[in-house]
Image (cartoon, rainbow, N blue to C red):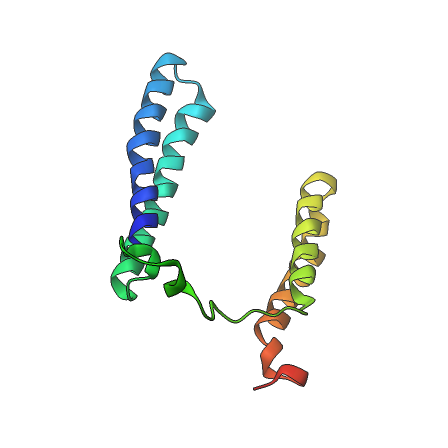
Length: 132
């Protein structure tokens, strides 16, 4: 995670000065003058999280300069190949974006649909065929 942390933390050194330069050259245009330094803050938060995470976990093969490809072989996590719940969550998100264009009243069914999808996805392995 050290590589990822450095990658995002170096983004601060780019976005903050570029945002200040943009604000000076544009005469204080509101959106870019505020937005570009905020992107610097966002990459700083992500980089800070990755830096904290790099201290808590063991070094990965990607972090070793002399690491070999086969060191990364094996299980990379638990995935649900036949799960329908991500589709339900995506449908809830799609209806939420539709609510911004059509009407805010659609946000309530979108939130309900997304919450049902998230709960179903979280407890997928707690019941039924895949229960442990």
